Amino acid sequence: KLLASKDQQLNEKITLQATKESVEKEMRNLTAQLEDFKRTAAEAGIARTKAETDIQSRLGSINELYDKLNTSTTALSHALTKPQDRGAYGQASFEAFLEMMGMHEHTHYETQHNIPTSDGKLIPDFALKLPNNNYLIVDAKFPMSAYLAAEEAEDDSVREKLMVEHAKAILKHAKDLQNKHYSDHVSGPNFVAMYVPFDAVLIQAIKVEPLLIKQCNAMGVIPISPSTAYS
Picture 1 (cartoon, helix red, strand yellow):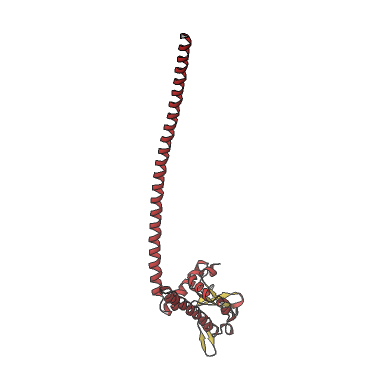
Picture 2 (cartoon, rainbow, N blue to C red; picture 1 turned 90 degrees about the horizontal axis):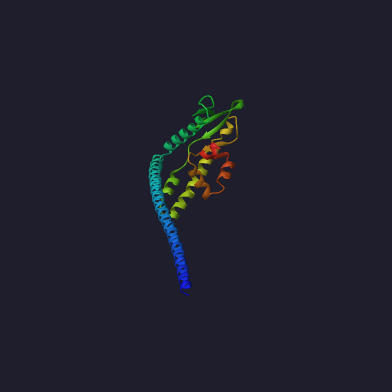
């Protein structure tokens, strides 16, 4: 009996030692996992902080760029309040487009080209040279007063009303070009291109008057803007 009791005690001691070692091993594994988790969390925190800093920096750059763009747009808008200034800007913008396309004055186009008529003369902004001594007439003047007023309006109803006036001004300008009867005095296409140097100016007019392009075409006028000219 004494021997059996000693064997039992020894077995219990061995079992207890094995259990203790197993528990210690699990604790070591758990501790290692916790350390890994802490390290990963710390690294993630650093990465998150860096990402947040980068985002804030980029947002700051975007806001700064937006402010500069807004300032430039406002300054340009004020600079184009006079019709003669808008005409000069439209001509410079379209000529820059022609030069970018590899076209040169007197070789591919004429500016302020005199066209004799029975009661005087016509002087279009541009006359693009086509084969067989034909010309495509391009007018670079554009109405913008109502558009500028609409952009500065704070009341939505006032803005909408001004945009309607803007669309009417575009159509009136097209009518004025129709009344010049360029096709009666120049060989070439039986239409005039009306260049508007800002896409938004034309797009906003179309938004309030969806048939604007069709109405202009019926008058022998094709409205174009930078996006359509480049395409």
